[in-house]
Image (cartoon, rainbow, N blue to C red; front, side, top):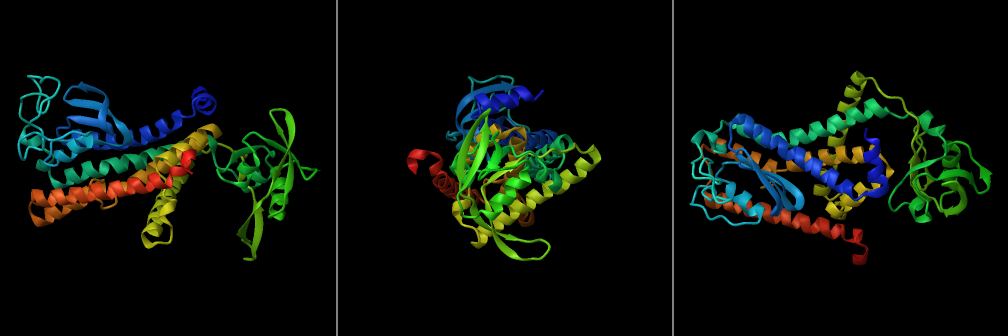
Length: 404
């Protein structure tokens, strides 16, 4: 059933991959907030994917669904004193009465049977976000990251149940047909591509992938001539393996070996569902740990800020994954979903983590912070996100070749 979709992504419209990856991750995150708000009885007049001016909108029931021009996130607008922030994200201004969060505005000419901002009816007190008990408010705020985690878990479990896990033996004895080429690797620079079948290395025939790996490991820094078959046509490709440090797991000896950044897709057996669930749970938590460690290294200076990828680089990787196959695209989807979940829990205003911290602090304080305090916090969050956006766009500049 997925084969035609995968073929289209790989061969005809790989540019749809970023739309699929970004759109699904953002949609699932905002859907979590939306469903939790609805379950708690909070009035949610808008569900938006993207920020800024509207590309498309339609109102069903009491909620307007929209797509914004900037597909870098999304939000659920709720009846809240912080609704002014949502108005800012929409790219508009607030003209409502003070303290109503802009909810006094009406749109679409006004609906006499609708609540603000679509009509004249006031919003009942019990449907405001702040009127809900603390557990319900926290539940609404963590629902987005929870949905992202569940998306990643579901994707990983499904992949394990369908594809299974490769064994070291299956990799070694796989046919020497390249499945993936890492961007920027020696293999990519040499012109190797997915689907190339390696028939010989420096004139010596090879029959399994381990033969190729052994020769490349020994040829660190040396020019190797690979005899490959591409779409039935033989050709020679010169490649220079890059030297990397490797530790022997048995002896602990540290040596330098050659690698070119190409891999095969070994034969695998699907997993039974119970094992796939157990393995998927562990793998998802491992992704969480990897993401947290990466953020810790960034915060402590162990990793350069230049390593942070932005939307352009993620889009480029999405296209490359789509060309490699559905498994690579799903892996990227799961990892990005976990990254979004973890990042949103950071205590930065505007993000879920910042809202959670503010809500807890107000609960401890016994009342809301002043409007001035909340305005300062909001501005600080906007500045932090803006600076981060500038940084990642600068890091992504070489994705657009004429900037390099």
